[in-house]
Amino acid sequence: ADSLANAITDPSTGLPVQVSGDPNPDPFLFDPAKLGLNEITFSWNEFLPVAGRATLGLQTFMGYKDQPIKRYQADGGPFEGAFYYPMRYYLGGWGTLRGYPYFTLQGGKAFLGRISLTLPLFQRVKKELPPLYFDRLYAALFLETGATSDAARLKDLKFSKKAFLSDFGLEFRLQMFS
Image (cartoon, rainbow, N blue to C red; front, side, top):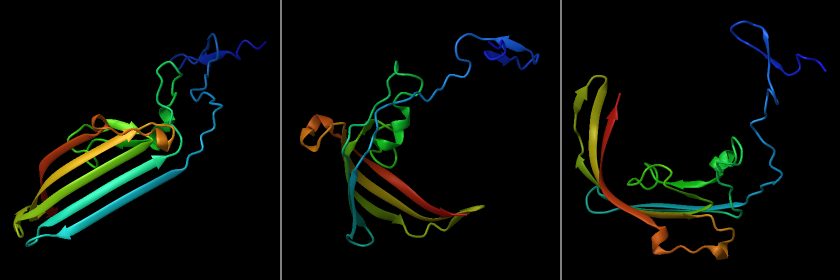
């Protein structure tokens, strides 16, 4: 056998160095299980004018994937389950449950509901801090709730009060231009 077949080059000297085992292990281990998904999503956003320029916002999102999605397994290889990351629904963080850290909940089935009341505080701020121009300031009160599940089938879903995370808060939004 060729002695250089199992050798790699030392970058500092340029000389071949013997290694044992496979010098180029494939980090993408073969997974014989094929994953075909069907996904159904529903999103509803309704913004209703209230007194003056105040707005009541009603929002909901539901997502359903018909297969359980593999999770990361520490002893399953370098990337076991990691490449299924974009297939899960995640709740937590700015766009979903603002009172919880990003990726607090994850799963193949998800529900998110939000009610918000947006009130204009200043319609024309008219202040400038070059290169920024501050235009409007709004306050929003919000209430959010959401849950995820990894149930294999729709009839196996068991959303209880414990499964839902809820938060509420006050948010200020400043509209500015550059």
